[in-house]
Image 1 (cartoon, rainbow, N blue to C red):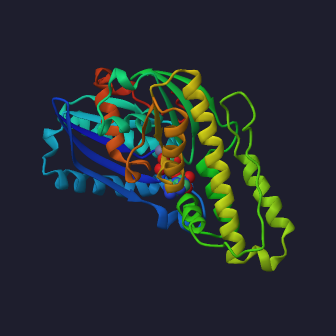
Image 2 (spheres, protein in one colour):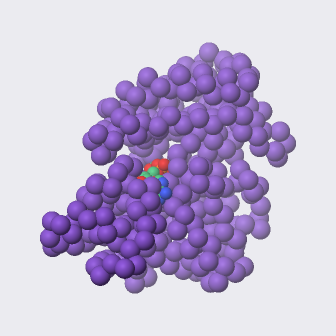
Length: 345
Ligand code: KG4
Ligand code: ZN
């Protein structure tokens, strides 16, 4: 079976071709066309601009994905497309493209939840099994920070989420304040790796909500704490590389501390047999390393799953994999497929 995956929920135009034979998954192609260059000038994403870029790029990315997969359009059996959550004008570009294609080839569409796709991409390498369930899933991206209890595929319970900014959004905003580069997460990571051991400066930031017994997060306060620290420093310090490195290290560690503590506590409370990570922030090497160390020591009987770095950030393959697992929801009643910008899991 050949499954096409399309995602245009945010600023990347993504198309993948997945071949499924029995329980074997083969990536035939997985193309991500980034809009970084377009949005870099503004330091953030503008939905109307992103929509225009998706409209321009999607037909080209689709053609390239088909060519690279060495298939013909009429060999596609199922189209998976993100219907939410995401930016409404952008979601519609992918949905309308999927509908045109599905009508032309008389094949069904399966609507995909972007958050579920960030989770299920983990089952691309390791097949889902009862030995991994129940699972505590942490989805941490530019738009979301959510802890989800998965009893089985399709059965999810949101147990906590951010009350304001997502972790990735916090990185993006801090990076903008310090002029580290765009997108912020990778820039913060780059700076945090630099050496400042001889520095006499000190930057201490809070770990928001870490002591609260719930599974919610708040990262807007962390961003504000960075702003206050920044404003109290003399201009010379603010602009120094040394200060930027210290803030990058500390903000990254503050985010990691809160995410690890709450995720492991949830895994213990719910008797999780696995922890599943997903979303762009999981591409962060320090976060990956510290999750591995902490889960090994604190919950040795639970397995830790995380996608390879390039499958943490948005991609079409995760949509195809999620669509495949949800193939019973495939429909030719195309009028029912609409963008749902605030779709919940
Ligand atoms: O999942 P994703 O590609 O898109 C959304 O669904 O939001 O996540 C993008 C987010 C951005 O905020 C970006 O700064 C962050 O993931 N990110 C990272 C890294 N790579 C991307 N954050 C920390 N370290 C990284 N290496
Ligand atoms: Zn995402």
